[in-house]
Length: 216
Image (tube, rainbow, N blue to C red):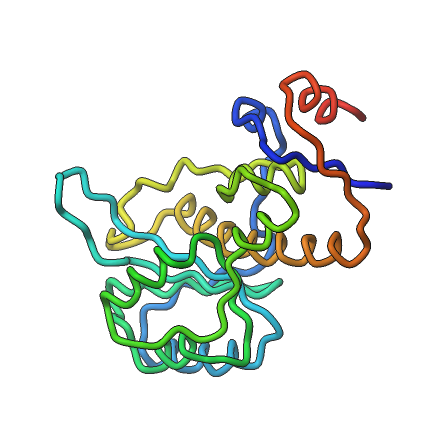
């Protein structure tokens, strides 16, 4: 069946969609030794989803350092608490690697934040926004892309929480893992659609979108 996707997606429709959550195992990393072991494992992966979180600042001109690096495979997501770890050599090696593709969204911002913690030359990164533009999609936030491609909602309610907290809440952990994993899901589906051509890109109207989502 041909998948219908839209060049723009009406944000008001997202709240009514079923929620998407990372279905695998989540690991919170606060030890350098564990960090090194995990990176060795990730360097053997076929593809990785990547994202970062930073404690929000509500003061003009104040920018906090990145707090969390999320790296996901299809089945496991690793949350590296950079607010505790800094930027260890093993993570610099992963970020500089040119063999394992690392997929993310708006990667320029993430990489800029990470490079404020330590110097490295970015390796093989794939920015989903670039590839979504190539097929005509114009709304490029993660939430809108996921709703557009999969008809599911990624909750953003934990986005502005304290990522430097002593302990991350279950809500924060799931939010962070879902964002990194969703990048892999989107890349896999985009690759399938571009290979098969099994999609129809249409202009957006509220009525068209509503009818499409409500179809059984």
